[in-house]
Amino acid sequence: MMASSIKDGEDAVELLLQRGADVTMTNNNGQTALHFTASKNNLDIAKRLIAHKASARTKDKRGQLPLHRAAAIGSLPMIKLLLSSRSPVNATDVDGLTALHHAISEGHGEAAMQLLREGAESDKRDLGGQLPIDLAPDGKIRNYILQSAEREGIEIQQT
Image 1 (tube, one colour):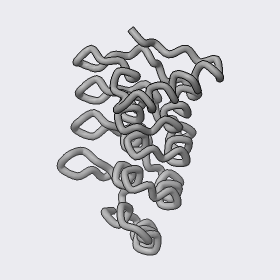
Image 2 (cartoon, helix red, strand yellow):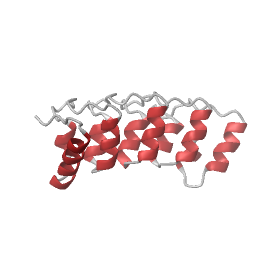
Image 3 (cartoon, helix red, strand yellow):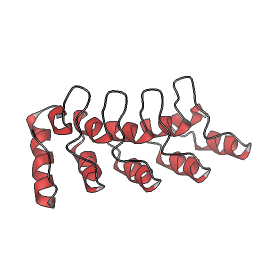
Image 4 (tube, one colour):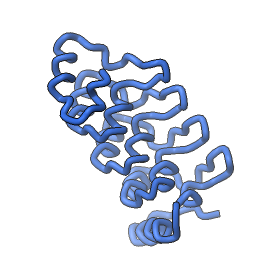
């Protein structure tokens, strides 16, 4: 199912699905095709995998869900798809990072806002004691998130 991560891999994935490929199979790192698809923002393939019972709730060996990957690349459509497929918004990885931590640390303000709208907890600290907002790469991203959240009536934990 590595075809799920390549650009224009829809035909290969479709053939594999028609031949009964197991969408729940994991590699040595516990990653599924949906993890790779989320990392590469292959939305159409992600939809096909989910239609074939791929789970948005499977964690890899680092404790990451496909949602963590989608947040790290800032893909709003993928985030929405995974959340609508029951991915837990506040799940943490082995470092205590949530999808919100990943979105903010990579500078994806809109992705962070979408996660907050969907119930992401801004007060969850990672294993190093950092709040998601503490991981903003610069003041511009931090201010964007804080101001956007204030406009929408979303409270952001800052201390």
